[in-house]
Image (tube, rainbow, N blue to C red; front, side):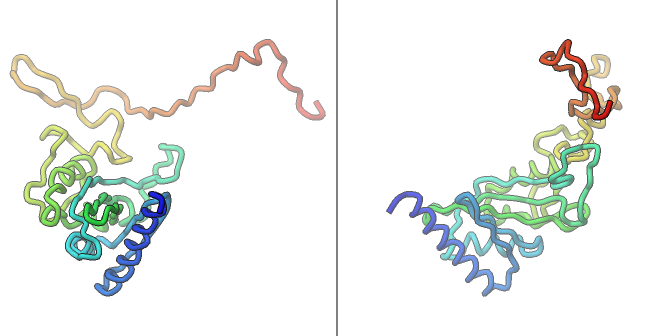
Length: 221
C-alpha cells in the first residue's frame, strides 16, 4: 500500500466516523473533502460539543490542537476594496482550527461561523489548553469573543490600541498614531495625521513597446 492510498484510507475512516457519531449525537454539520484534506463545519451553538466529541471519542482521538485563527469573510470573492460588502448577517467572522490525532495519524480542519454581534463562540481552552493564546490573538486581531476563556485580553497590540487590525474594514492607516513624549516620559496616542488610502495600483502606465506607433483607426474611420 502506498503512502497516498494509506492517507486516503485514513480519511475515509475519519469521514465515516464523523457521519456516524455526529448524526447519533444530533450535531448538524457540513463536510468538505478536497486536496487530501477534510473540513468539518458546525453551527456556533455546537462548537464546544463537537470539539469534545473530536477530543474524547475513541473514533477520533484528536489529542492535539495545532492552531486556531479568526477569518473575516467580508467582501469574499470581490476584487475591489472600494466595493467592500460586509456580507450576510452571521456569516462574516469564522473561527478555524486544525486538529491532529497522533494515534490515528490524521488531521482535520474544524470551522464555525460566529452568529452574534459582537462575534462570539465558546472557548476551546477547557478542551485543548493550546487554544488559550490562539484565542487571545483572534480576539486581538478580529474582535471575536470566546465565552469561557480564562484571560481574554489583547496579546499582540498595545492596551490602548483602537479597533481590530485584521478586519477587512480596518483602515490601513489605523485610527491613532503613537509617539514617545519626552516631557511626559511616556508613549502618547494622537489622531492619525495621514490621509486614508488603499494600496491598489490605479495608475495606467505607458507601454514603451508601442512607443511611436500610431493609434489604431476605428472601424469606418
